[in-house]
Image 1: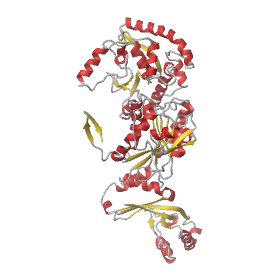
Image 2: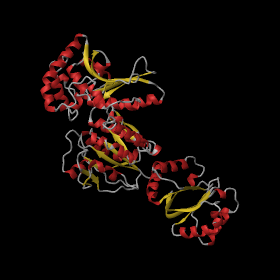
Image 3: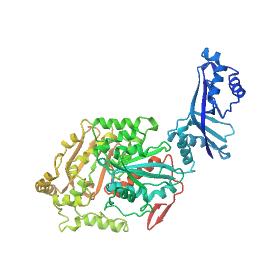
Image 4: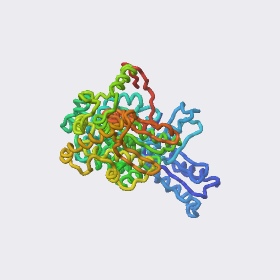
Length: 599
């Protein structure tokens, strides 16, 4: 088992004149014995440079006074440099017969303390191997005990969660955390407690849980129903309803502070692990990432405005990631490129395994993918869909939200205006459509990729936009865009017709060339049978040209849009982070309704 002793003082007698001198330990402990001081713990390294012992805080002043008198001559001659005390401290001990002759116990014990950012002041272990004791500051003792209990699977590892952005993604994430909480507790022994939720970066309101963090017992967590009850608002119409026993409980309330106050509600002294999910696309929230990381809070983000922001902001985030070395908070941004697709992880795996990446290109914007597919569809769309449905025994459903087949001239495509209206109705475009049409969205993604590839970027996202083949300028207002629509209809119709004459379709592509450092976004005439041409709408595709994939590129392709898939990817990022601390234990892979799942 594990236990702690509070109200302890740690006394250290140190000096180079102690090395190889007989009788120092006898005099030290003899003096303590003569005045009735009880020694709880002793620690001495083989260098003999110091002797450390623990006693109660009440007895420490008397012990220091008597030791200074006993070693007065050595202190005067600098043979002993100091006799000092640290308090209040606590002793954390692991005790049990099961430790004897069992490798890995000490490693797990101290790894847990390290992960919890506990500063260990002294260590003691007897050769019986039935006890390991470590001394830490008293205000860290509760956190230390929780970390050790979780590491040895005597309790759940608690992660305090903050969320900013109750849009479709944030709403879906709230419901996912609510629905999966019990399974994560059982399978991963991980308890994700949502303790603070901010509507966005502009709102001054913050919904917080009324329940404090608990140890070993499931505490209250802010659910979607609790959030909307506190805010007196309604859930998003795009989110699947999820009924919980918490729906009718008053478990959350509103305080002031907004997103900027998330840290003070997520961080508590007694808990080691905290995370903030950024589900927005707001630049103001992106500016907070470095502050959160510097405070020791892990950040899982779908918002790429921080990594594609001004040079000063990008530098601040990079510095915050390294501020505390191996104990620094983690910045998880897989979702900033390709949504739920494993683009950045694939890139890192290639680099980590020694491959050399020469070029990355593809269709990065789901909105532009949808527009171009519907305006300039490839040939034989129906034949391909019919084949996939037959070959996969019903597993392939096609693009369920693709309305192209509803148009009488599906193979000929539709107008730009019609395609934009459909994309907006399907929530495939950003809140401000100009973000997609001016190439700002794609430019930010390419900036993140360039950073991962070590390419130094001069300028900012607007530099890439200005050099790109864009439909509208970045400063265009929505009203102005509506006036431009008729002109854009004709311009794109012309370009698509010219592409058709060459047996091609028009596609919106982005690329990063490592050799030249060039970042490009442009409309390209692509052969009808090319992989870019047949990539379905609502899907992204990314190609990696590397030294090992020279003949054909490595391709990552799939649906990148959708609140549910993005929320799942955000949660997966956190679980990957916690994998080194807690791994699957009780989960089993089962088949249910012709699908495999972990229960």
